[in-house]
Amino acid sequence: MGKPVVGDGAMVLGQVCDVEIDEKTLKVTGICVKLNENAVEPMGFKKPRLGSIRVDLPVEVIKAIGDVVSIERSADQLGSVAKRR
Image 1 (cartoon, rainbow, N blue to C red):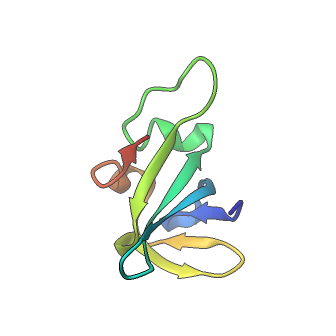
Image 2: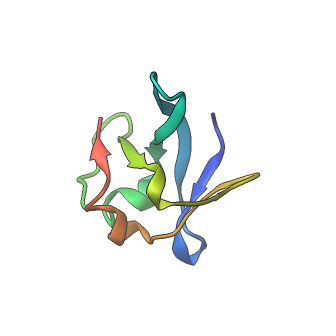
Image 3: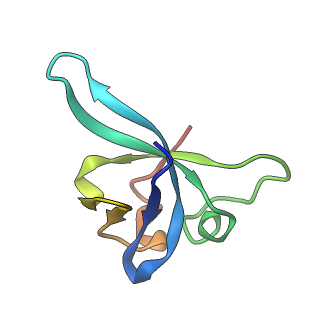
């Protein structure tokens, strides 16, 4: 939780705010990301007046996890797989 999420091109998309786990297999199936303001519009969302946008991303788009969570796509490519919470 709280790790920065970075897309292709080294753009910081936001921070991990939650993790989805399959209760039967105990495997991570996705992550929830609280988007930074600069990632909202490229991902196809409208900037909210208050608060922030949180989206769920499937584990298939994660390239690596370390000090940051590295995503294998750019912000504009993630719009098709990101599900708004």
